[in-house]
Amino acid sequence: MHLNRKQDDHILVRHFSKNPEKEIYSLFSDNENLNQYAHFDLPFNCSCYFFNIVGTCNGILCLNDEMCLWSAFYLWNPSIRKSVELPNPIFRLDGDLDQTLGFGFDTVANDYKVVRISRTCFGTPPVVELYKLSTGVWNDISYVAPSHVIFHIAPHVYLNGASHWVASKWEEGSTPTMIVSFDMHDETFSVIILPNSLVSEVQQHNDRTNLVVLDESLCLVSYNKDKTIDIWMMKEYGEAESWVKHYNITSRHIPYEPEVNHYLIKPMATRRNGEMLWTESDGLLLSVDHADEKIKYLAIRDSIHTNHVFHDSLYVNSYKESLVLLDKWRDYYAEDACGESYDSRKPKPMTGEISC
Image 1 (cartoon, rainbow, N blue to C red):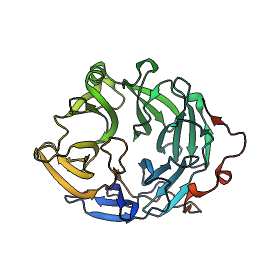
Image 2: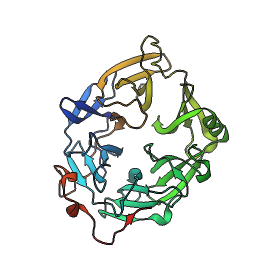
Image 3: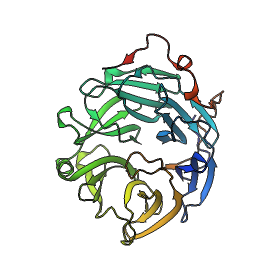
């Protein structure tokens, strides 16, 4: 089922409050003042401070509790208060966990899917698992595993029916040279090549890199050693020659207000009016008009901010309400999935473990 209840787009914001300690999920109207439209109570407890939001698609949030024994997953439609707790993945990873996740929608099969790429040893092929909402089970699809190094610390972005991650060849180590994608319908991995000029510039100046979707286009954000930020945009999806440098932020300090001793952390989304939503080093959410050099401080502050691109609890994305999960016969409002015993949550015997 994929029915939009309202056609108006909103901005979904998740932040963490210390008093009381809890995650707060809110919808804001994408108008001039970003007025709050709705507030949702999270029906699950997380074993850490906050869930990892794998992604959002058609009104569904995919949540992951990485600290849980078997890495618990939930699909949650907050607008109709319906949720599904996913079964445990097939494999439990021992030792250092290298887990890469993706979430999206198969428009042909009308199905929602979660992909999990797990690796414990550098140089060894990863294990790939795929969950389908239609079947309710995980399948081992390691036979399609990518032969590249996916930078698991950076979250995926979902666009054009596929999840995307920054990656490189084995011999190139930590330098991003390509984007690996997973097609939710074909259930296969493919590579989007970055142009040599972009790779060369990233290799010389880059400190870290992540992906983001801006103006419905795939973008690569390069955080440079000289404290500048470059945003590259792929104008034509899948065409390597269409990459252009869309923005160059000459300083990570809050632009247009040099007296403010805060700096930009990460671009999160674009608004209808063309402004860009950024997180900043003091936990605030900003709306920046780069064309007219104006900035707005929004009344949203995160209580857990690490000044890191990947690890803050502040999450911002566009959101459209839907009726997805309305046809599910059961609500899975677990009080604390991680509070269950090991025996009650472990998969059936012989499902396998991954270890070096």
